Length: 135
Image (cartoon, rainbow, N blue to C red; front, side, top):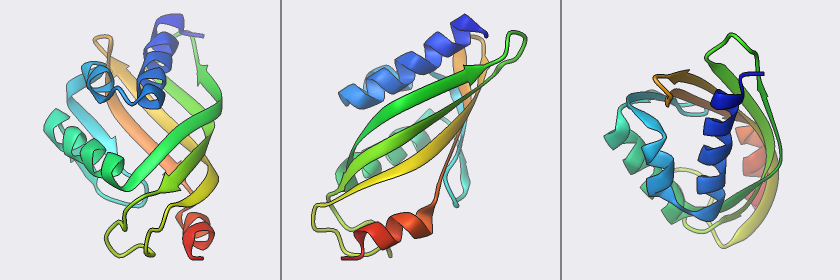
């Protein structure tokens, strides 16, 4: 296991759970590639910052039961976790929000370059999430 890269990802998720977006952003490479679940790839800290502001407006989430994986000679790290959330504000064409609670499994994949997160890719089952919040 690449301990240094794993620690970077642990710090990233700890900042997320604490709502410390600036600490998260400090761990990202200036040209971070953000592959959004079932969406487009965005590049750069400015795009990631805007994405996080939108997410904070629409969702309140905590990541629990996390497992982080890496190999010794790789720049890649992955994580699996449960997202415990509240849907606060309607997000685009998704179902209307009225503080619905949800728990859904997700996975994230990272690449580390120069001790910064160069790529963030996150996957979860969007149709399942939609079913959870439709009520």
